[in-house]
Amino acid sequence: MASGHTATREKHGRELRVWDLPTRLFHWALVAAVAVAILSAELGVLAVHMLAGETVLILVLFRLVWGVVGSQTARFAEFVKGPGAIRDYLKRSRAGGEAAFTLGHNPLGALMVVALLLVLLVQAGSGLFTSDDILVDGPLVPLASGAAVALLSSLHRLLANGIFVLIGLHVVAVFFYLLVKKDNLIRPMFTGRKSLPARLAATEPRRAPAALALAILAASAGLVLLVLRAAG
Image 1 (cartoon, rainbow, N blue to C red):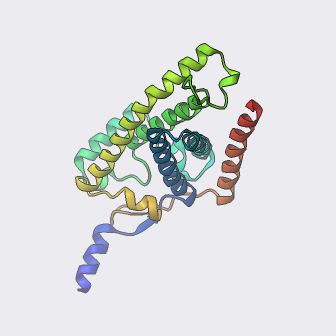
Image 2 (image 1 turned 60 degrees about the horizontal axis):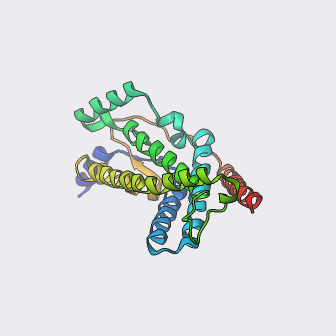
Image 3 (image 1 turned 135 degrees about the horizontal axis):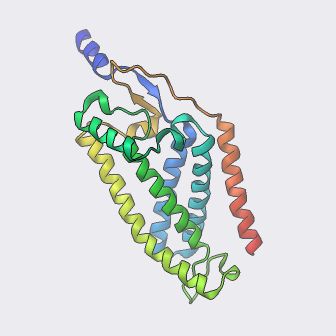
């Protein structure tokens, strides 16, 4: 029995705290807010849909700032790489094993993160100017021309389909890594910890203070509320 435990430790190595609490809370809060936005739109509960959209906007603004000043693995500079780095990662990924290990997002995952954030930012922002020309207007519709409202309303509806595609690709990728690569990306986003290959040396990523995350979130919420009140 002891030898079995030893073999397991040698195979998996130790665990590092990779994802900080603000990043994990953001991730699952965004999942919930997007789910509520989609479901409420399908059910026609537009008051809830607008509130969910404003929540998405606040969360995305927070993540954009956190991606600059936050913890090491949350920073865009840490995981957003150029084409050369992506090709190198794909080559290492084909080799398998420790060669493809990354502490945080890998270069391919980074593309999905950036795409989702940008599309959700535009989607939530355009929703503020969207009108169905019947009963419901977004809070910033009075500030825009009729042509701008029509354009942004069309963009909002079009991007909804794009979000479904991105979510589907994201889910497929997560299960591909889980079932084929044997790399569980879901558990670390709950626990914050990731198993380090036994022969790979690494130190725990630097973490930014939680108080900074709270300040950024409050500022993001304050900015959105300020804009909404100014429009009202």
